[in-house]
Length: 259
Image (cartoon, rainbow, N blue to C red; front, side, top):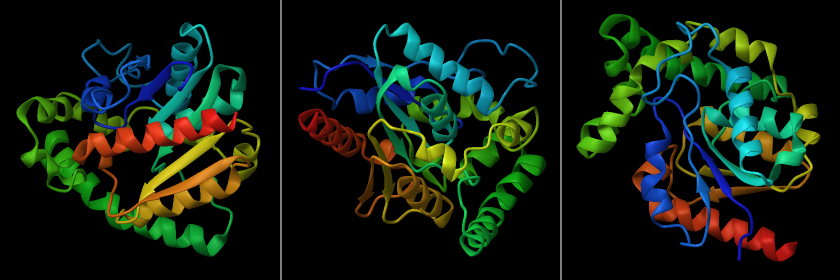
């Protein structure tokens, strides 16, 4: 049986509500915590976006974990992985384990050739999204970033992404997000300092902008597992929440049994 609460942190253009289908497939006994990161969800923004970024979200994660009253199992999706790594590095006492699905950070890539390939892939993927953001606005850009899924989603799930689309301007460099990333880079040396058990998970059908960072992060963290989910891509938690829940539960169960 898994001991301790599970802290679930959403990704970009999203909020805590996206976890409901995943939680529905987790063991009933598990205590789950699903907060919104700053600037996401329905709460008013604390400013016009000046404070948005990795530092702010790492502070959020540390605050959520501390409020649990005991070390937590941290689960992060995509964008939030960077802040999650920072939180685990700064406050290892707050975390039992870490489960990171497809981190997209770049600062931990040491090999120049690999980094060059990654940066080229990022430009190819994100440049059209940025152009769409500038031409058509955040909702159209979110739809492009989600690669057609937004139109196929149930209305309540689609509404979550649309309501959080306003944050995409901050994610894409307006506000402090770019400077926040630069001021809090996570190098491979930083990742090597993480001593808690970690799983870095990725889909075998995902894009290289996520596959390359995921593999590099798993290679850098001493006590880590690289879990490659057959046939999955970046949107596993949305497309198959029951499978995501099963993978997470299986890994936590195994780590618990290994002590």
